Length: 175
Image 1 (cartoon, one colour):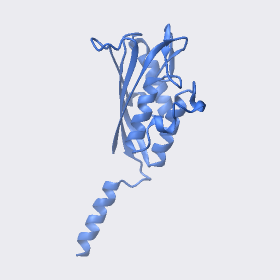
Image 2: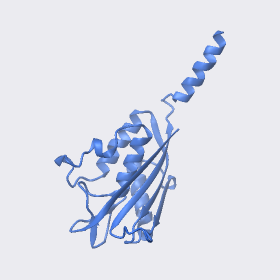
Image 3: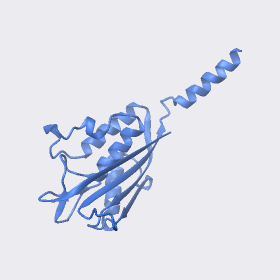
Image 4: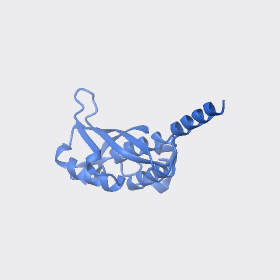
């Protein structure tokens, strides 16, 4: 098994749509960012990449690269998933926390969970979404996302731990 953790934040900005968790939420301000500013998808992408010790989202999709200007963050997530699969892992579950003053996430959490299930190709029951307000943190004009993922080795892959145990028992039997 592997655990990955990701974190992201973006400031609210007028004139852009608000996208969180792959869905558009009706709100007067969106999140500024080089791409679409989806803090939750960015945090999940980094969690997935971190779990397999891959480069982070900023390295793979540089904010200075014009190709990613306004890009849908689902593209970043798809690349992270491709790398997770290539490394021989699959997502067991995801837990996330959003921290923002407004809008309230509760009314949107079911839609976010369903969209994440679709994007991640896992059951919605394997996805946790929590929302908190930033009481006293001074971040009322920003959205922050934390994400943790648990990856399991797929049947086709061989876990380093299994290989090590096998090697140790073979070594012992030779002596």
